[in-house]
Image (tube, rainbow, N blue to C red; front, side, top):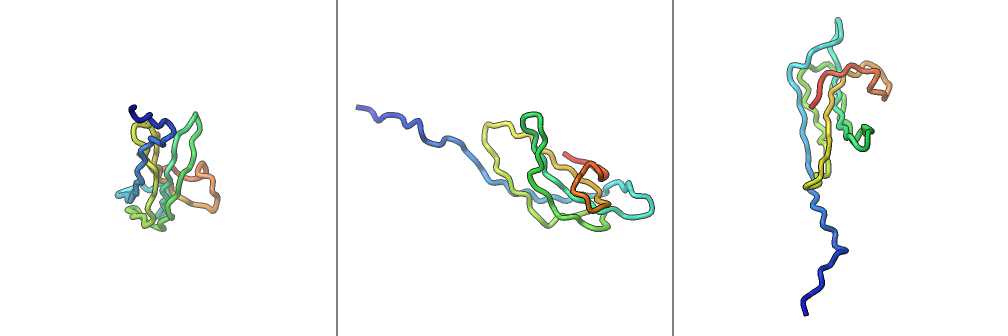
Length: 105
């Protein structure tokens, strides 16, 4: 007889991805001072945006090169809506809505 097909096997193909992020020529929204950019990785899931990871804040830089690497699981043949956002951090609050959005992809 032919071998039975095993249905219980995990068929997901997942790849670990490491992202290195840098920015250049960011527009300064602070009057009279340089800005302190921070990069966050967001994911849209079921009408909610979830913050997956955050990089370090780079002080006084228009051309930040973030040293922390962003790690994520890439699931083949599955739509993953990811967004990278760069914010100017001017306070100690963890709420990004209080900071200036500089751009994203």
